Length: 292
Image (tube, rainbow, N blue to C red):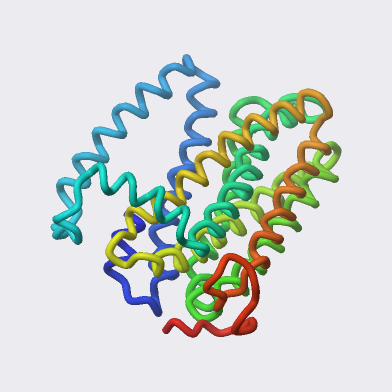
């Protein structure tokens, strides 16, 4: 869906359109957390998978009924060549590699937080029920409420690096608050959820706005390469977060996420917005976008 948005919307409004569509995705994630908590509290948790199966078939029907016809952009490329080209883009495009690495580490902070949050809230000093824990997912509404406005007035107007720097700072602030106050103050994790979800979503939109320029006729492939990094980061964040929390607790697990954000800062600034190579700042650091 998101590559299709990139094809249909002009560059000057691309971030805003991506944010609106992404808001639907985020709303689904929040609804899933809340619904899963309610189901697990009253009936078998296995019923969540039956619900997911039914929703997948519903999505197929909705796509068939409402998705407009869209002619293929590339008709002379085999499926095997498509797969090979995805790996090629990851080797030859500095912009895509930079965005994918940031997506990897920032997604790790996301899954690490939401996985370990369940352990924190179910134990001392909170002892929350499954439903109470799931209600904290509502704190992640910030990308839905504020994302389109941020995208319209910041990402659509200013350079990728400027937008991402602001988003990374928001993520960093949220994790610091939650990591170092969460063991005794419930407001800490709530603020972390609000800040972190918003900052992560805006970073992903800024990155997608940049990578969609890499290959205008292959945006789906470019997005696939980016999402491979994001999903691998989610797996890594879950594994690392669980391990660190089990051995050292909430504070250290949050500190690891802060390190991941720090790595993302470094990745963001090893290459400037106008640099065509892998490293450097040729062309300076323009605040306003020049690709419009």
